[in-house]
Length: 365
Image 1 (cartoon, rainbow, N blue to C red):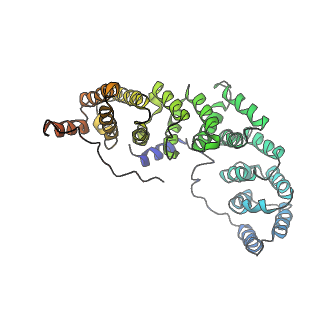
Image 2 (cartoon, helix red, strand yellow):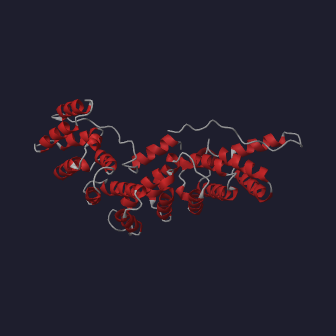
């Protein structure tokens, strides 16, 4: 299963991030939306932007009857410019808007706006809006609460409220209402922020806590961690994560295996033992799961062949590890390993071992 099919599987199951996802297509509403959009652009495109006049127009219109979808469509991207207000007037306006039209807040656009607005609104308002999402009748509310809560915690680790809420969520019983959705939200944001140096340690702690006892949704979402991470740094958080994956191989979905193996190829020289352990766990899981091994891992398994050859060049204990991986590949009738073996057999006796297979680098999105 390639990455595109993996993403389609996640979307079909409904398991995807609200805050970090693509958002999908939407239809702009009729009625007053074109007028409000035109007035908004007229105010924002002035030099400098006429924020006071624009906000005054919005405040007046808020007193009138309106289709909630009109407000929802204005939230992103136009309401992001509310940060230009010099006082708390914008926060007060949004609070009245969310009170009068809860469905505007309970939407992908509303979540995006709150994620940006948290930089300039009071913490009191942020807590109020997050609690409203938590208790919202919107199906995505609990997950959105988890994603925004984790974002606030990772970027503001000194805040006591978010610290306490994170601890409570991590210790909550999965049988309680919406607890799994909230934890899924925590996971998506922690995975997204795992590459950031300032939040890496805290994000790792959250990820490891969640992955110790994952449900089916968490296992599907786990592949998102490999996709969004540009690289696995050779540091303690990475080794901790590899240990968790080694103990729980089902976390490595078929669609994300190729991406993970690419990361492991970069790490093998730094920590050959942990890379070997995870590769062996992956092969053992594959061996027990299906007989059509070659088909499932076509185009991906060559990375483990490269790792096994690299380990053999290290000598000593690592040479034995490399040979063990290679023997496992041969036993599973992996074409890549058989081809390399034939190549080695045809070379003169004094020729060095085959070099790793060179592949075109994966294009990252």
